[in-house]
Length: 72
Image: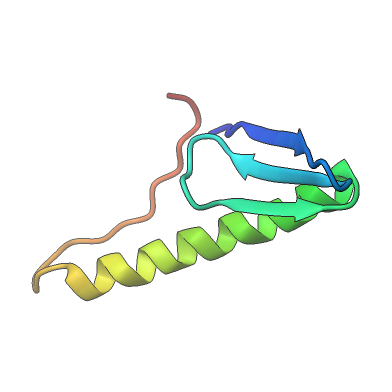
């Protein structure tokens, strides 16, 4: 699966970075490289948080498995 990273120049310098397909995956950095690294961390945190929330809300007896998305 490929996601779209968007890097927006900030007026005060540096970049705001976001993942277009994942609301809440937002970060910033002084350079695009730094913003990219910070964005990867932000994406991991959003996914971990979503996973924890989903597990708290799932009914008993639910089936869980790992899926890998090669192409959509």
